[in-house]
Amino acid sequence: MSTRDVNVTDGELLKPLVILSLPIVLSQMLQVGYNLADTFWVGRLGQEAVSALSYSWPLVFLMISVAGGFTVAGTVLVAQNKGAGNDDRVDYAAGQTIAFVAVVAAVFSVLGYVLTPSLVSLVGATPGTVEYALSVEYTRTIFLGVVFMFGFFIFQALLRGWGDTRTPLYLMALGVALNVILDPFLILGFDQNVLLSGLGLDGLQSWLYATTGFEGFGVQGAAIATVFSRGVGAILGMYWLVSGKVGIHLSLSDFKLDPTMVKRIVSLGAPSSVEQSTRALGITVLTALVAFAGDDAVAALGIGNRLNSLVFLPALGLARGTETVVGQNLGTDQAERAKRAVGYSSGIVAVVLALAGAVAYLFAEPITAVFIPGAPDVIAIGGDYLRIIGPTFLFIGVFQVVQGAFRGSGSTRTAMVFAILSLWVFRLPPAYVFMEWLGMGATGVWYAIALSNVLAMLATVLWFLRGTWAESVIGEARESVPTGDD
Image (tube, rainbow, N blue to C red; front, side):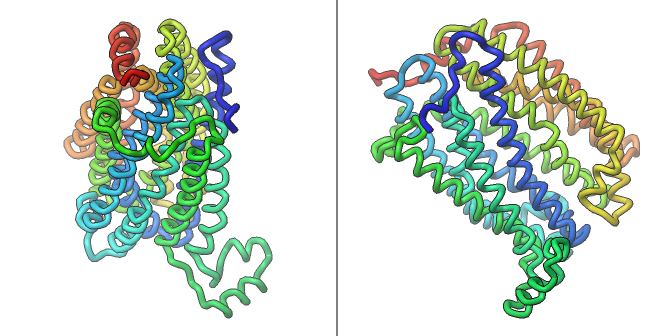
């Protein structure tokens, strides 16, 4: 396993960039597999269940993002230490990041569980309704497993900084396989299970139900499957890190928090944490705004968000690959090579997402119908969503890649500022104006999202072309990277 890292600091650049990023794209595709599998099987329970997931998702994402931003610190510290040849400090930086993030994740797990009923209500779910009850149940179950789930995220981040993106891909594949197998049974049980019926196993289904009487956990079953499969991945990932089988080799002393190192992690990670949490909060506010248009619109938004997650996989993969390439090359004093990598990634993602946008525009309603058959109102609203937003896919793709460059260089504050602008300036105010003042309803929110995609990309690209992010960050990044004399 330890030889799986890709050399991105010498020789050809485009090929290693693609080799590094492709497993991330595939891993992200599997990540979306979690969400799509949950949505697909929960959709068999009806509109109320799908709406419950739509209310839960932004809350779960919000709490995880607060801790999740600190994984960026792990990627940057590992990448820049490796690029600078400080291999003896890579293990230390990795262990410190794991220990710090574990503490933060545990705190938010407790807070999330306690505050879930109030938060679900704030998002827009009405207390006393079926959607509210299901959302609270699902969200609390997820929060109980946040620490275990987060172990895998930090494993991914550290290995990505090291330059190994294949090992996390294999581990993700295992987790998704477990989740896909467990979902239909934990959600639907054995009574009238459509999976067993579809496979022609009605006899087995009848026997299982007669023997166990298990009717499934409903929406909560999706959360249980996700937490369990994430937990398996986290345990394996931590074992590999401690054993040294993945290049990084941790010892118990690496986990003893050092105030100086914690300060460095916070300096790099806090802006990314703010970036991710404010984005999650913005999505939460957007969901609450759409709730005024009704539960059908919320369900359409939930399906649209999951489809977007699938469409943006190339952008997210290339953005994270770019983080590693930029970090390692700035560690070796090759700023121009780092900039070239950003250009390559942007060009690739623009072409891919332009094609994806065309498909979304032409087949909007059939795509939406896959996830919630028999709900014509939701399908119609979801079709409008894809037709309006689809043509702007390439803009948000380039935006994500440039943001990855900022983070990889250690300029996490810059990425934070543009993330805040994207949602809180370019998206939410226009969404309110279009929906309420102009009376456009949910359609007005869709147009606001499309507008923000275009404006966010233009703003980040103009700042990137100035070049000051690289000039000012190189020295700062060196100061942020621990050396053997620390």
